[in-house]
Amino acid sequence: MLSDLDNATVAAELEAFAALLDLADSTPYASRAYRRAAATIRDTKAPIMELVRTGRDRDLRGIGPGISARLRELAENGTIAELEDLRSRARPELVGLGRLLGVSPKRMLEIAAALGVETPEDFRRVAHEGALQRVPGIGPATEQRILARIEAEPDRPRKGLTLPTARDLVGGIAEALGGAIAGDPRRWADLSFDLSVVVPTTDPGAVLDAFARLPQIVTVVEQAERSALGVTVEGVPVALSLPEPGGFGTELVRATGAQAYVDALGPLPEAADEEAVYDALGIPWCPPELREEPFRGAPPRLVDVDDVRGDLHCHTTWSDGRGTVLEMATAARARGYEYLAICDHTPSVRVVPGLDADALRRQAPEIADANERLAPFRVLRGAEVDILRGGGLDLPDDVLAELDWVQLSLHAGQREPRRELTRKVTEAMRHPAVRCLSHPKGRILNHRPPNALDLGHVVEVALEHGVALEVNGLPDRLDLAGPDVRLAVEAGVPIIVSTDAHSVAGLGHMRLAVATARRGWATAADVLNTRPLEDVLSRRR
Ligand SMILES: [Zn+2]
Ligand SMILES: [Zn+2]
Image (tube, rainbow, N blue to C red; front, side, top):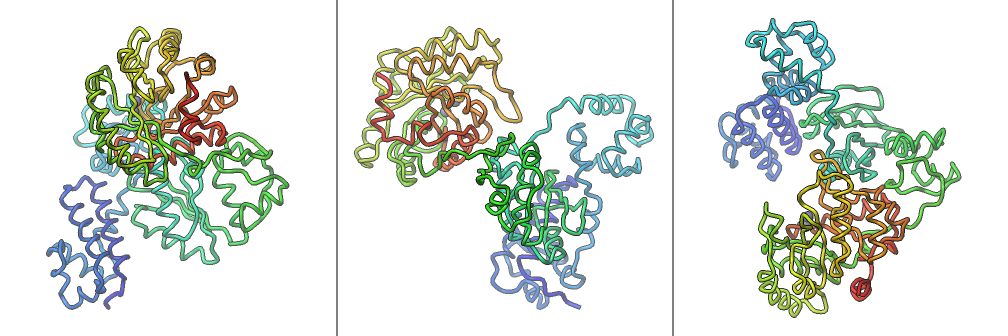
């Protein structure tokens, strides 16, 4: 009996196969070949199962004898035996533990099979009981190394997904199932640990089936009548909940979180959309970005992407950017902006090329030319100036005075003690050319914690000298973070939302900077680059 799977379904099966092959540490050629074949099948107009039946599938680009045999099997049995086998052995939770223990996915599954365990908890337990010695190929040294890592494991912070990754992942799943994203990414959390999708439906069985077949979901580890927990190939759990349409709003509030915020709302009334839930609670609807701490009041009108009139931090091919001055400016104008500041690095940054006074003066005609071509759009001559060890600036005063826009940045010495770091940064902020302090806390998400800078003192100096503080929109920075933005905004220090774009595509990260400012309760009035350029430039001397 030949099955009639459509092309999208067949492509999804091949993609799942590729993901599982990666997990099983097979050669990268094999998984790449399956991904290529999946893409071809997706783009093919003719029904692929029909081509398989008539033996014409081999005419398609990227479909060799091996993949053709799998397609034949899929056509005849509705399934591929090796794929099912891989799926049953994949155990992403064990693979995830293996990653922490420094054991490859394939070896981790071999060890688990030899021990007869199926969960990370069982693995830890039998390892402590000395069972690892029984596994062929594991000597005392390897056993000690694995046990030591198991001991150290709780101290390691879990890694979260950055915003673009998390939103793409849950966004793709929600779209495929006709639902909405929830959990951490809906609140635009800096890092996502809880991923959640809510789908209103009267037929939960059909949605559960569709969920299990998604290429993003490698395996479903838990399933109930109206919920499931799937795991992606990266080992990330995704919760699916399937309320009746009449309870969609209620479930969306609950699944969006955060837990402390939802708990404080009390029992949630049943309603089809969020607005109706809030109406029934007798409180105004709350933007997801503000749903962290308990709050029942009227939220302010938060800053929006459409309020932003220009981007004041980007790089070009003069330092480590990939776009020219004209390319970056043209793209910024196409986004509807009125201005863009070119802020390439200065020499002290070292790890990437930096511009000295001469180079910045050689860049000037190129910026003038872009201004001529794109008028009335304005391209500003700027720089991202490093703070030197003693608190000085990495450019001479005469060239600093020529620039329209000076961003101040600390790239080295982030681990210095609080007092020295704060002294150096505030000293540099007092320089009359400085307009804005970039990524003040210096954190790199999942990688480097925030520095010890005394933000309270920085805010005082910023107020006194008219310096703005940046919310940097690079996905692994988002610095200032929401709570720090709130501190600055309450003190009356202007915020600047920037992308720090290193390419034309990077200008799109404005959404992340704005969302982070919103998480700090910023309104358009709190954000300097929602104003016309004259206002932005007149703030200082
Ligand atoms: Zn920087
Ligand atoms: Zn930068």
